[in-house]
Length: 122
Image (cartoon, rainbow, N blue to C red; front, side, top):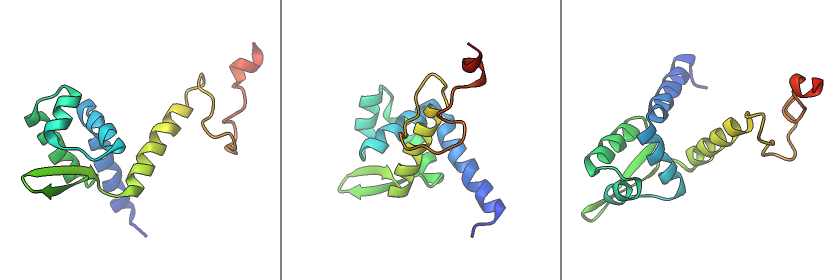
C-alpha cells in the first residue's frame, strides 16, 4: 500500500502532466496510438522543439515512455492501465455535466442518473 505522501506525489505528477493544454493534446494523441515527435508536431500544429519539451515533462511524470527505433524515438503511454485510467477520468469528468446523460447504462452511483433538484422543481 502506498503512503499518503506517495499518493500525493502521484496526484501532483498527474496534475502537472494534464495542467498544460499542449501536454493534454499530446496525451490525447498518445492515448490513441504511439507517436513520434515529428509526427506529433505536424498533427498537432506544434514545433518539434515544443513537442520534445512536453514529452520530456510527460516522461518525467512517469506517464509516457520512449522507445528507440533506429534513429527515431517512439513515445507511448507508460502502462496500459494508465490508458484505461486516463480515458475513464475523461469520461467520468464528462459524465458530471448535468446536460450529458450518464455514460454507463448500468450506473449505480447515487444521484448520478436522478434529475437534479432544480429539474424536479421545473
